[in-house]
Length: 401
Ligand code: ARG
Image (tube, rainbow, N blue to C red; front, top):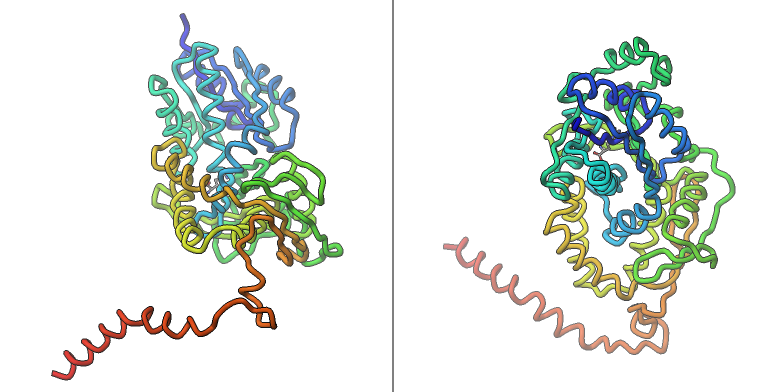
């Protein structure tokens, strides 16, 4: 029987050419798999037909948009996940769900190998292959761009020579990856890190310099998950989409960073994640009133470690799973409403309410009715500073000798 290879297919030039390229290089049959993670753009049926037109023996399309929102975006939200304090892990969280569907398709179609279109310089190759090793340890991996010398120029020449049903003239200087959690743009003019991004780079966000009138939104959460917007019930996918639209119109969620890739390269990235950034901001503010101080402090370090693991392609690792259990436990009381104004590139929280809040008005107030006994503070401070005071006494004594 002819060997079969499942290819992660985007519908773009590189992966379209990869279908025939892999076939010629290996003699295997190629099954194209496209996964919908809310990237928008062309219909999946159009993409499926193109794969068949480019020589795939089968083309399989998975609608994973709700699965992606529920099982990948929501854990990132609960973790307030921002790699290096900036990047909401847009591409990093999409790879594991794509891997799941690739492995499923490999089983269904009897494939021995999984192929992806990543280069040898990025994080995504690591995320794909570590994921595949974990979920399908018997499967092999190949990357035509990296392993079979499929360069951009060769791809264009191949498409023209074979008359593939794909546009080869439209030259986009950027490498773009997008899904419902956000959009990542890199390469080209952006590689000079002094160059400011030009307006044409953005798609999910309008320019914040000319915002429409401020947009006030109320986001309701239950155990860390957005469940309603302005009182209207929503699924996680609907919440993200609605906020992509409303926060995007106000230019919220534009990010310009130089980040540390796993492979040791620093790289310039432009992200737009209006829905994700609005949700993370709201969620964090709700945690501020519902999560106990020590739990909250510790959770911040857990969230950071979680982000690094996910960035580094360890979605299916035991440590990531253990951190998920901790994060999940912290979300028990993260229920309530956040009122937020979207305007001029910012999402600013200006009100919060929760039936499970730890905010105690009677303790906090400086007005009459205060229930806090201020006389307790003196003794507390005396003991709190004792250890450092004893040590500094020793320092003075030793230095004096
Ligand atoms: N640097 C980001 C990451 O590693 C985004 C990568 C997006 N890929 C792309 N082809 N633009 O998660």
